[in-house]
Every structure is written in C-alpha cells, then in structure tokens.
Length: 197
Image (cartoon, rainbow, N blue to C red; front, top):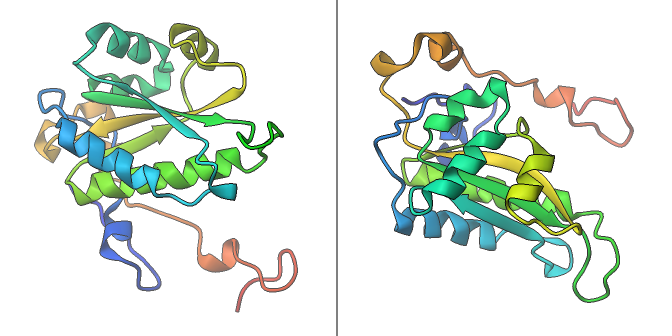
C-alpha cells in the first residue's frame, strides 16, 4: 500500500514515499541483507564530533524470545505493531567517548540515523514506523541497556498488508490522507515566529 505525500514543493521521491503504516504482514520476514542495508544507511548518518551515538537492538524470528519480550513492551495503542516481523529499538549513548562529557546532541543524531534507516527501508520496499509508545523501564530491564543510554523509539519494520486485508480497526487510519503543517508553520526567517516568506 502506497501513500505518497501531497507535497507543496518538490522533494525526492523516496522522501515523498516514506510513511508509517500500522498494518504489517506477519508472514513476510525481513531479509538479513535488507536489515544490514538499513543499518548501513543509519551508519552513515551525520553526528556531532562523528560520535555516532546510535545503537539498535534488533528483534526478529532469529530470536523468538527476544521478539516476544520486545512486543511485550509495546503500549496498548501500539498493539498493531505486534504483527510486524521485526522490531528495532533505537538507543542514544548520552556521553562522548573522547571525553566522557554529556552529548546534548545524541537524541538528534539518533533521529538522523533512524530517518536514514527508514528511508532505506522505503527504498527496499519495506516500511518502518517509529513509536514512542512502549514501556521504557521494562525494555531497559529486559535488554540490559546501560544507564548512560537513553531509549528512544521502538521501530516496526516489514511489508504492509494489501488494503483489502487491513484489519477493520485500522483500515480508516491507513486510508486517511497524510497531512503536515505548511513550511510557514515551522520555518522562520531571522526571528522566532516570523514566517519564512
């Protein structure tokens, strides 16, 4: 299922195609080569001091117990993601390795890496949906994540279901048009809240 963005200004096709579906085909696993391609895309994202503070935990059928624990962390509103054949957990290391000082840009850099990953997924015919709705405390305990790391997003990855196979509870959400505020609503020239003209 495709949902190309209705853009106001020209952008790359891969950017316009990227979206976050809620209906994944549990019978179609993500190939290891595709996973490595997505992680390679994340690897080449920009970061402050080239710190590369991103870490990704991968959960799929190669370790069914870990996948079950990752699914158990999802909030009720994200129960749809339990059908995704793969979940990733993005994590930010909060200190610089070169001086152990706080890296206030870590979450920004992990976001850049995760977008690169999502765009590569789209290029491969896969879809990645990043979610804040999961139990951070449970995930930290389940997966032994160090205290100097911040858990960022759970990411569902997989192939979408054909529209005819969509569960009724999410069919309308999947069919709804994509929307964003206009550029003038978030870009300002020279001063806060002075719209870019």
